Image 1: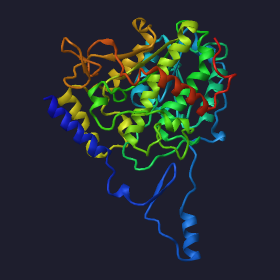
Image 2: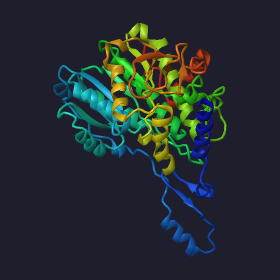
Image 3: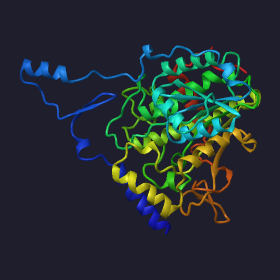
Image 4: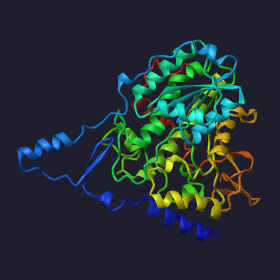
Length: 419
């Protein structure tokens, strides 16, 4: 069964990550569109026609999109804990936000790209009126991150932030060429790592004023090479010696290790950076601030919007495969409850932990001596402290990643937390 699983996963992953014939045509790409089959014009008329049809590259965020700060948030928050959830308009983030809001113990800030979409889905999820607020956050723009922090502080006034959940992510496995953030980072690393890295650091000083504050950055089994999902499914996460980061990590640098772009690996590398960030935050700040830093793997949410870049056949087959072959499938609602648990449950008050659930997976994940799945996800099961790969726990690479990330996002000495 194990050999069959490995062969099937390899086949699925290899086909899923191979560009289609159409996608391998010559293209001229912008952040938002790719134009196929463009040929050299032969006359001024053709040139004018092309100029009319071709749009200039679009930014993800313009300063004119900055929200007018919301105020008097303290009255709305009341005695509840204040929690920010990034990527809260769909999937894991939305379900975590809804779970926390419905406890009555938390006031949720839904930090999202699309404000109107978030408002609609919040109502659809029956999130109680007065239990949340929606605020603009585009993690592909460092300016948007700074604007969000400014608006959040204006909204909550003197009230400290209790919990921060860094959940938002992009996954672009089929892209033959990289897309870029407004600041020139490859999109997966820019949104998943650099955007969250800046966000966390800008909020630490405020969070240290809260009692029992917690930061959770969502990790992934795919970033841990000590698991089947991360070790046997090609490609493996590998930051190398961070050659790409050493060169500034900006266009034309495509990958953390300085090598050519590989969409599936870019996502996995970003998750390694997420989990390393948690460890370094713990080492630098936990003892003196009391903030609890953790990561987690919620299980395989096979129907999440994270797979929207995948081919239609994969989006149909993958949930079936995870449900009936591996048992690693977990629904969005249960996954959201798990993420909420990490910042709400008293048993999750230990810092520098990678939380997982030993659900009903049969062959995915890491096995312990008693034969039970560990770190596999799957519905049901109990929460436990999982073990990360040696690469994720590499202290020297982690410190180097931290220092280079500080430089890449432009954190000043004044902005860094002093303890």
